[in-house]
Length: 360
Image (cartoon, rainbow, N blue to C red; front, top):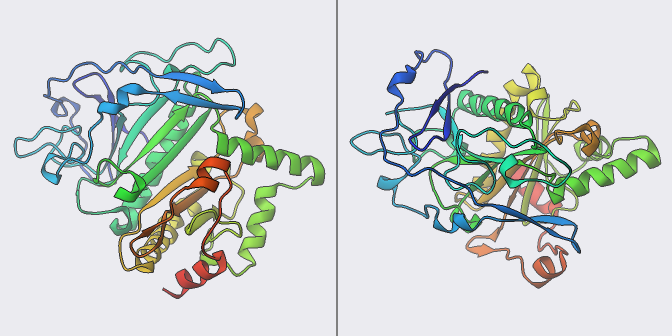
C-alpha cells in the first residue's frame, strides 16, 4: 500500500491511508493553514554503562500537549473553523511526524549519514498514527476492515522507516487510558524508529541466540508451540493465537502470535492480514469485559531488527498487550521490587486470568 504524502505547516510529513473505494484525495486541498513554528528536535542519547542501555534526553517534550478537552483535540479532523494536525474534514487512517518527537531531524531534512556504531538521535523518527477521525471510537469498536487498514499502515511504515539510514528497530505501539499516561484521548498510536535496538527486544534476541546455539531450535517457536497446546490460550484462529504467557509480568497480559514464523509486519501474508483484525478485536472485547470497563493498556509490536547482525534471522513478530489494572479501581504500581531491582512480582496467576478471559 502506498499512502499519499503531503506536508503540514511546519514541514512535517503526513501520510494518508484510505480505505478501498474512497475517491482519490486532491493533494492541493490538503493544505495546513496554521501558522506553526518549525520544529527542531533537541534530543541527546546518553549511555548508562552499568545497565548497558541508551537513555534519551528529550527536554523539549515537556511542553507537549497534555489532555486537552475533546473540542480542542489536535487529532480530530479540521472542520467547523477548527484547524488541527489533520488538514481535512475527514480521514480514515493517517500517520505523521510527531510535533514533539523523542528522535528525529528537522522536518524535511534527510537523515544523517551513518558514521559508526554510536547511535544518533537525529537518525530516528517518531510518528503518530490516528486510527479513525471519530474521537469517541476506540480501537476495540473499529470495524475489521479499518483494523486491516491500520495493519497495512503499520506494515508500510515499518518498511519505509526501516530503510532509513541509521534506523535499527521499528516499534509500533498503542497506549490507551489515563492510567497508562495517555496525554491525548483520541484513538491513536505511535511508531518509534530507534537508532539502536531497545533493551527489551535486545535481551529477548540474546536469549534466542543462546538457545539456538545450545539446541539448534528457535526459542520463540518452542514457546509458541507450548502455549498453543496449554491452558492459557484465550483466542485461537487459523493463523493467530492469543494467550496469557506463563511468566506474565502484568496483572493482565496477552500475547498474540502468528502461527507461521514471520519476522516483521511487512512479511505478513494475505491470510495472516485478513484474520488478524478478527482475532485481535475478539481479544480487546474480552479485555474490556474483564472489569466491565475500558481497560487501560499498552499494545506493542515486537518484530525483527533492521540489521541482520542484530538477530534479525531468529526474530519472530508478535504483539504484547498488558494492563496495569489489577482489579476494578486498583492499579499495579511498579514499586520497590519492580522499579528498584527490576524484579516483577505478580499478584495474579496467569492461568486464572486466561480462564476468565476465555469465559467472557
